[in-house]
Structure formats: structure tokens, C-alpha cells
Image 1: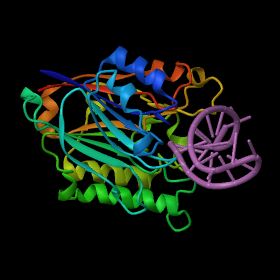
Image 2: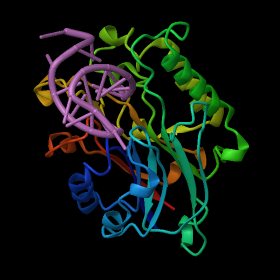
Image 3: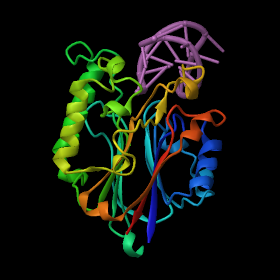
Image 4: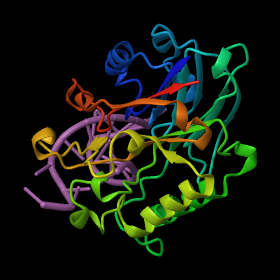
Length: 271
DNA sequence: ATGGCTTCTCGCAGAAGA
């Protein structure tokens, strides 16, 4: 079977419902991981999303900020959620695809929203940047109780770091801009190396090619200026690499009505 | 020219995003 997994920072799930519907009907992912849902659990729009075919929904939300969700056509089990690294933010949820789903059974999906890190890339003066680095350290340790182990597992989400020179519109211009500083890129590499995670997007789109998933709201003509960054990622445990099919970055979604500043990414997995 | 915008909140201005 082929499973399509999508990741999208939608910057408010309630405001973005029309384009979530449009994306779900276009790409028809089996699993849709959302970040920045910005809604309390009790106000989550379950029924609108079930109408799109996602009968199995697991969420971790909070008021106003952050929040992550896994929407699935297949049953989910063994959900982990809750604060991943101090501050009590809703920035991580994981679940396993349940039994009775054939070859997909047992696959674990991790959905992360890594802290953006504020403006100043110095942990000594900027607590948000300090939190970001600590969060990445927590991911590196791969705490067993969170099941962050690189076996039959997928990590997706807004990791808020553009690691390669080709993941930003200008490597030189962004070297001191949070999301592309060397200290972040190195921490990012440590997280990936610690688990042996495979960068699925760069398995399909050559590292020499520019690749972005985010364009600032402040750019009046985002497409022509094209000052993007690749902040959203899909990682696979090495055992899943042979089954990797197409990767798609839905750049067109940035031009939809009332867009998020991030676009969705999908990965096909043959299981 | 990375902030020119966009989101949230017991809003009407400020914090946060990246």
C-alpha cells in the first residue's frame, strides 16, 4: 500500500478551514499533520475535518499560540502529547497507526512545531533562542518515553530551521538571521544524526536546487521576490527509505485566498 | 529591504511569528 503523509503549518486552523479543505481534496493525504492550530482543544473544529474523511484526530492545543494536530484516515493509537521541553507549549504530538491497517500498522508519526526563536540569535540575551536550542537538545536525546526512536517512524513538522544554503533565498544575507544561523544549523544536524533520520525532501529534490516552504507575509509579491526558506521538513527512519515515493511541495497554496505563510509538503510512502 | 503583514486576545494595542 502507499500512504501519503502531509505536513502544514496553517497559522490558525479555524481561519484556514477553506484552504485546508482545498488541500485535502487536492492532495488527498492519508495523514495530515498540522502546526500552529492556535486553538484550545475544546474549540477544535473536529466535525469540519471529519467531513473531509479524517475520522481519527489527535490534538494538542493551547489558547492563542502553537498547537499541533494529527488528522488520519487510519486509526491511531499510543498517542503521546504534552510539553516537550519546558515552557509548557503544545509543540509535539505523536501517534502510531493502529492494528488492522495492513502494512501501515505500527508506523509512528511525530509532528513537531519547533520554537521560532525570536529575533536575536544569542541565547544569553534572548530567552526564546535559548528555548529553541534546548528544544533541539531534547529532540537529540530522543527520550524513549516519547517514542522518538528511528525505527518505522516519520518526523514531520515546522522545524523552523533552513539547514542548507539552498534552503534559503540568500545564504549570505541570512547567516545572522534566526532560522539559518550556524549554531541552529549545527543543532539541527545533531538532531538528525542522533536518530539517523533521512531528509526525505532532499532525497527527491537535489540539494543543489533551491527549495522553500515558507514566504513572509510582508513580501508584497512573494512569488516574484521569492525570498523563501525551507522551514518544514519530512524525515524518515532509514528502514523506510526504500519505500519513499514522490515528494511534493504545494507552492501554489501560498497564492490561495487567505493563505498561511507556510505551504504543505507531502510524502508518499510504500509500505 | 528582513520586515513592508497577519494572527491572537474577555482586543480597540501589543505580543508573536520567522
